[in-house]
Image 1 (cartoon, rainbow, N blue to C red):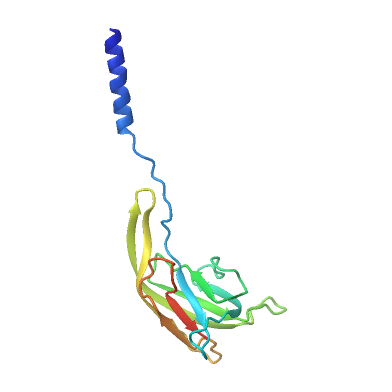
Image 2: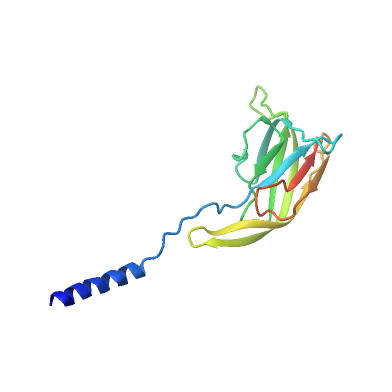
Length: 168
């Protein structure tokens, strides 16, 4: 009887251990940010910071939380919408508020269009969104500080290098 109890216990233990699934831990499976680097229009090989830059999303919460607000930056990472194929941002140079708390900086609007490519990472991580066929359109205005936009990588799959160059 003792042998049967031990055999039964060992069998249950093997079944229990064999039915366990390994823990799924999600590491580094994030939707990439759109990386933008700013360059000097007069010498296109030199990176040039934008003074007191503020970037605001149009159509969702205005101030983008992936960059420091109103700082001098030469490179930024921006989130694109995962539920739409277009995202617009206001890039504000020399951003500050006047006495009435209204923005008085020079704003240019860029609209990014793309195709969403879902990429399954794992059961723990699920899907992340990558973006393909990236294009950019600058809305013209009378006081435009952005002179040119070059898409250097139409596939936004990682954040290792810049996808867009903006010349000012």
